[in-house]
Every structure is written in C-alpha cells, then in structure tokens.
Length: 457
Image 1: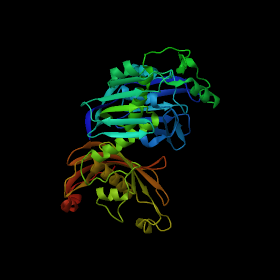
Image 2: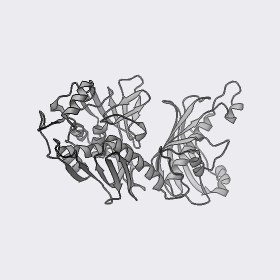
Image 3: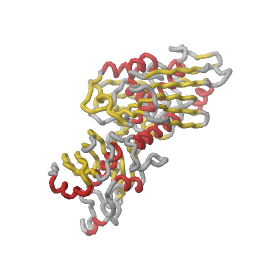
Image 4: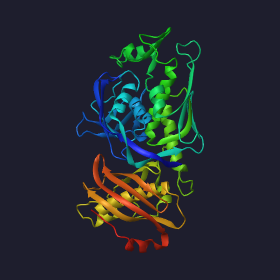
C-alpha cells in the first residue's frame, strides 16, 4: 500500500554539470533547479522551441538499447538513468532539470559528478509528504534469462541485490552484492561505479557511429585480460553499477519503495517492466477493495473500470480512459471530445465550443478516480466537490480535441481530499483548478450540493 512516510525534498540552490554524451558525443550542459512540492523530476529541453518539458515517468519511457530514454512529443532525453539515480539516491523528489541537448552528459560513466553537484547545492524539506509503496506481496518479471523480483522487506527501507554472471571464461568474474539504500550508502557504495562493456561490444558500437568521442578512460571496457586503459574503483564495480542503474530506473515510479529487490542478469528493459508491475500493484493494493477495477496489462484503466469507480453516466461521464493511476499521488486520464457531444447542440450552433465548466467537471471526474483509488471507500458514500479555487481557462476546446486530464493529490483523509488538476490539449494548457472534496451519504448528496459553498476565482 502507499503511505506518506517523509517530507518531500528539493534543492536549496541550483547546480550545473557539463560534459559530453557517451552515445552521440554532443556537448551538453545540464542544470538542476529547485521545484515545488508534487512536481517530481521534470526534464526541460531548453535548446528546443518553447522549451518542452518531459516528466521523468514510466509512461514517457521509449525503447532504447543500453540506456533509459524518455520522450514527450518531439522532445527526447537519452541516458537519464545516472541522473535519476543521483536524485533518487540523495532523496531529492522535486527538481527541474534543464538540458540543452538530447542526451545527458556521460561524465565518467557514473553518477559521481551529479552527486557532487547536488550535494553542493544542498536540499530543503517541503510541506508535502512523500508517498512510499510498502510492498505486501511479491512482484516479479522475467525477460529471457533476466529475472527480477520485489518482495516485502524490512520496514522503512529499500534493499537491492544483484547477481552478475557472464559465464565461465569471460573477462568479468561473477559478482554479487546486496545493499540497503540510504543517501550515505548510495554516495559511498554506488555513485562512483561506472558504465562497463566488453571490448567486442565497444567495437560494434563505434562501427555503428556510436560513442566515437568516448575513450577507454571514460568508462570501463573489458578485454580478455581485464580492464583496458583504466582501473577499477571497486573489485566488484560492475555489479555495483548494475544496482546504480536499478536505482535510476526504479526512480521513474515517482514514489519511494519499501521492498527487497533481487535481480539476476537484468538490464534497463527488465527494470522498467518491474517498475510497471509495481505501479499496477500500487493501484490494485492501495485500498484492498473489490470496487477498484484492476488496471489492464497495459497499465491503464478502461471505461468499465472507470464506471466501477465513478457514479457518473451518459451524458455526463467525461472521462474515457485512465492512462496512469498512482494512488495517493496522481492520475492521468483522457476525454475524447466528439462533435456528437450533446452540449454542442446548444453551445453553440455553428461554433461548437466545450463549456469551460464542463472542462473543469472533467478534471473533477479524473480527481474522483484518484480519490477512489486512494481512500478506503465506504458503502453508501460518494465524493462531492466542497470548493473550487484558482480556476483558469486558457484555450477553447472544440470537436476533435483530446483532453489530457492530469490531477495531483495533496491531502487525503477518510472523509475529505484536496487535489489540483490540469486539462491540456497536446502541450497547450486548456484549464486548471484546485478542488476540495468531502465524502457524504449518496442519498443526501443533492442536499449537500446546495449547502456547501464553492469558490471560483
């Protein structure tokens, strides 16, 4: 289940790191900036028009060999795992990462440079609690020979274990390590461990035009007789780097994890698969109630699941699909705006525009899904809006648009909840609002609507 376990943290000051991308060889500067509570980690491509943001989340991950890549629209950021590991390892939850190229600086193939910059910047606690998934049952994935399993572990900590084995006769000996994660253990035991690969792999990459500016001094290349042109920092540096990558990939969950995670021969793809299973586990076990329709294999909630959570029906159900659901934290849903919507008949003939109040209602319904997944439901109860603040309508919504509804939880109790939400069309903001909900008897809800004042402004 998800629990609030500690205050969120952000940077006290900004920090900057410059270098060269290991894969594409472009010069790049990366700036870490403080961010408000609930922001999460958001990369911003400041070299592109309109500075598009790319949230560091699982639903933004795109397939890439030997690295983790995220994308939103035309904006892509590659090899984010060492940056994410540094932020997660130091427990920095909210940060805007400005980057002026499509790949993070490789530095020395580890997280050490990022950790040093972040520690110089310092951190501060914020007035919002960080959510932690406390694992209640084992979750596992298999990808060929790779196996990962997360099992309930010691309360209040994440422990990571990895067994690396390339078989007999290889230049890298079998290695195993088990490490309890704290900011201190990450900094001292993992942050300096570097990317590694075998000499034939390095030659194949260079032949394909990848890593042409990367030398043996920039990372660990293993030949028949061991490391070429470099020296190990730890006798088991390879397995330590595998665990570092796990820290960075699991950080895409967007919350902390209390679990014992065991891995064998896994890489980024398997790490992402485990993280997706953990997200599904969070959605399915956070409330342990039959009324929560389980997420599908794709990690989404279909219309039947939405109707199991919300009392709304045609013509007033304004959520078509839930793309992401993290109980206690956030939900992302969509509303497809069709010309057949009944309100277009009168709003307005010849100039169909979705009423602003219905855009806000769509945000409220997406918030209803989040609340239903975050608070233990009671029979005969329904969540009603108690107040609405800070409403801003930014653009018109017309037939053919798809509304992306993003809602964020700020406080949940058994009988009340506070959320904020955005409605977007593409990357353009259409509306935003802050809402408070209260739980009332369903047969008294109509009376409550008349009795509770609302504020719009």
